[in-house]
Image: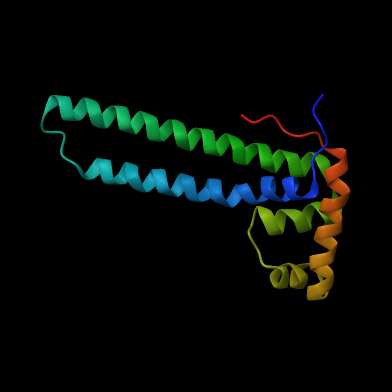
Length: 130
């Protein structure tokens, strides 16, 4: 079941990859902050352990979602289309950088990725919100 995905939804889904990456960095930073705190009192230690566990769970969750997005691209595209979409949304390259890698003009690279995603959208069911 599930309705078909719209173009904007596919874009939003692919773009969420970079947000997840920043979320992971955010929680890693918080964890290294916790490590700097002295565990002098026992109750403080327990609180810190709980936070550590919470942050690790959040990182794990984000990593799982990132893997899902990677698999989504791998399974639904191939060849130059897959490479272009990967460069843009996973490697976070600009259209200019992508055009250089693909040997396309800047404008064509942008249109090529857009067309690829437009082609992708109707084939996809809306992904479960995990």
